[in-house]
Length: 629
Image (cartoon, rainbow, N blue to C red; front, side, top):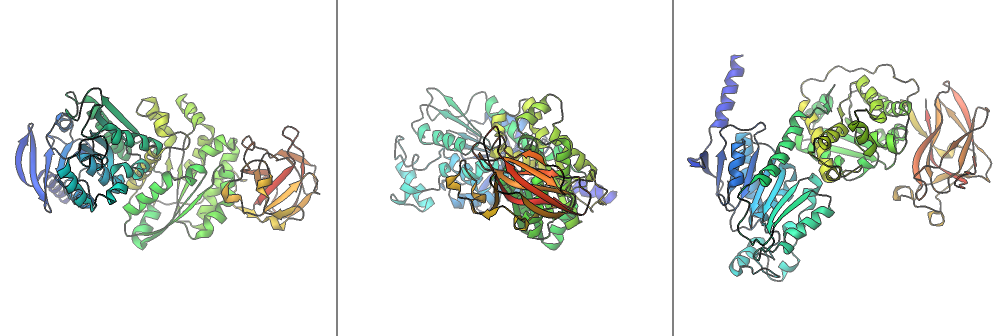
């Protein structure tokens, strides 16, 4: 106990022992020091806010300080690192890297900082953020320079600054010819910021003749919006390059505070992260063996360039010495039923998996329109197969959100797919990221809009929120792994031994790559060269011998999809419509189950196609048959 108290004293002492020459700045303690060859300073609040947030000013420290003073009063540190005359070049970014590492490491400041750049300060805040998007909470530019060709170059409408233009070209290694096509300006560095979901605020004078809005902020606004980023531009009519900011800084302070505290609160306090048994097993493997295999399975939300690559980056940052293998197994439109049958081929066959992320709540709701039973059978099938393949595997299930799920949550109801998945995750004590609940809460209290989130397929900002919640789970899990066992299945018919059955084992039908150009509707690229088993109304029925309790078909159902008729073990013929509501213009991937409740053993399926009386379709195309032992 005495040792812990002593360590606490040391920590408090180390955080309060700021370095450098002490002075006063607006009645707050200011410390001036150097990091490397650069002059730096840190202004310290009387009491740091939870999470120790900070604002990093670029250029012209102390000019129009209203927002900085208010934020100091709210517990923010305010920092500055002089990289003048470098015009945001790679050397300036390197100096800022060193400053960031110094103050975050020495004073335990928040990992994500609010960047603030006036005029030419826009160059360094954007270029540093593009290299370090995971370290930025938000970015505020005030009449910011976003293209050196505009200022100091003066190549278009602005008056420029010839002396500074010569220095800027030298700083970036340019001449008049190479500057024309230069792609190192902030206007060209936006993709990493949008991907990380960093919100932007610009305050500009509409009559700015030094840094013309149309050559700088207007371009940022247009391009960032096209990338799915969140940006707000406040325009001051009739105002030139000066004065900067506002006499009343409320709009600026609110933007910085809301976006900075929002990041910290997600990392620390979100009630929508359910740790349960945590991810200590995989974390220990990553730390001790310096190697790890992480896989992602889900629908289009997993397939897209969204939360998945962000989580990969988080893991590499958290375990920098670990050599990771990442398996991406997202397929648009697919549900947990399909997931359970393709898990073996698409994930488990790629090598021993240590950490598996699963995402199917949205597709089980809107694509498959599953009943509770089907949601449980699919997700539980994935869980049981995963644990059998590696008893030490950790699984994380994430619930994304669509409009019906949002509507249900806002009405105080638990959406069917999430409620069913919750039964599985609670039963097996699997960590769960209830992103849907987080988003519903934020929209409900007006911290977020559906448009800002990005919709069913989230914008970078929305995906970043999901990654932040997952980061909270990673940070919360520690110590020794908690005991875990594989209990009896919730549903004895769950697809815990789900697998593909090769179409070539069937007798009947025709196998080959369809002539997609001659067929109505589009086919996604991933399926265009895949041999399929095709049946039409003119074909005889096919037979498939299989073993186990279930049989179905993983199909592409397009505009010409008919009705499948099947018979099991010589029983009566039954029908299932394979045309999906999305089949009108797309050969839609889906799994149809013929039966899932057979007695174990050997069975025979007979399958034929009849015309769809509503849509006129007469075909069936099978990627794989599916079974469950």
